[in-house]
Length: 374
Image: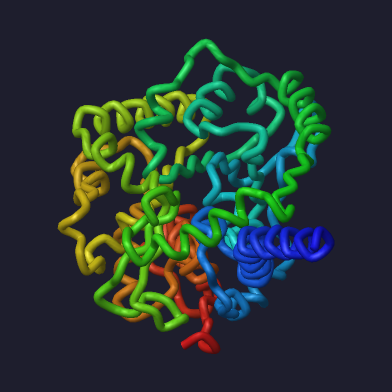
């Protein structure tokens, strides 16, 4: 009797353990199958289930040769000559399919890219470069500053005019940063937060646009905007979080004044400033959101366009919006950044600005044929 009782207790214990462990194990298997670090940032941070091969459409572009140079690959204490020094954020970090790479390939233009891991605030970086001696060693005709909409005003408020970047300090920073660049980030364990978030978020998205807690919003659109044929838009929560801040007219004016001052200082060194502002994905597709009345309207580009500028300005929102009328995938469906197609459009526009042409012929255009997608 004691033996049978022990067996019964053990069976109950095993059964209760299975009831607890089995759902977690199933969630872990689903996350292993459907979560991929090779997919876009919005799928990753939103833990969104996706088994499509959407990114395969751009494989050829993802594997292209790199034509530009990273400043981290130089000895900045030596003399160098480039056509353009680009200082930007993640939109300048798309590697083989970045607008910089298409621009560098065009006419063998010499492009130098200021790696993002060396700086997080392009405005601060440019100001600090001007305070130091770097451009005495690196001669350029243009400095291109690229900024994403959501961080524009936020970064402007963190400017420190006393900081400087010298060739010596940058060389030391490059060496130190390379040593610390690789960091282990193990999130694949059975009891990692990814396992739980993957299960919960994919349930909660049926109830709320950002699954109550997610950093990725998932909303319905009026039209199919991407080649996966879904009437759906994913966007980063900061796009929405910063709308009120970026709609402030006074702050927009201060931003423009700062850029005008930087341009004036560069002119004295015979360098032209190009400003490339990138619309947030939420802003760019705002008018296509079915329930857009739930969200505030982004007005930054409307206000910024009306201000007088003393630098070369690339109105990327206007340029890309015209293309959206007859093309999908201006941005990547699963990511907060431009697709190769969007990047090529911007590279073509930069070509016109740098070579001072109102239009460019078909032969001069960077190839933007992605006909296999459409």
